[in-house]
Length: 261
Figure (cartoon, one colour):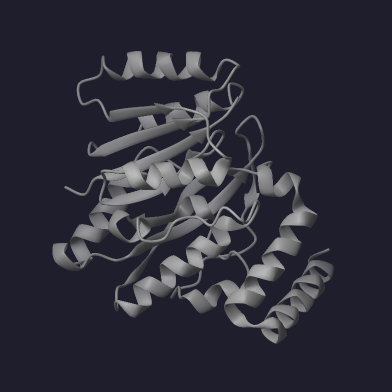
């Protein structure tokens, strides 16, 4: 059975973490490791986590829960810790306020992988669509950018076409590609590109589930720092694709935003 590591990175997330924990607990797929990395929260986060652990031990098929609580150097440093400790075949990130789109998401993903791939040649990346929700978990809209039918590193020249929370990576590949801590807002963009390039070099598949995998809290760190995030992404895009391609892509982003309005 395919085992998933769900990595949840928290810091003072007491207001939103409960919804995420409940979503993980509701997953019908049994082979789940929930790895929670907390940067020494001082609010109600740990109380919510302890309640979650206590409730999970009472169910018939409890998920494995691993809690790491120690200071870190920010979000992406904590995510690197999660990658190195993950025991699952695939790792995915579901942070405070984010939830699975339904209780059977992981079961459906596992069934697709097991049906279509040899156990010794599983896809490097499994991906899908994302819905946006507000701070109360209420549906806002489907994510404007749709996941491409065939995903490659080149796909990200058009922006973050796959939401990070709907981008599942084989753990053995993830461990070879740490998040670059020089980037404060777009290290996930850089990481996805490097993961995809490694998959392409090894000739490994990238599997489109055609499922809505995640309900994503729209007010994340990158959303709150939108302008600085765009500047950082431009630099990253130039690094990966060259300045002419990066500038042309951002001109299109501006035009697309005007058209959408």
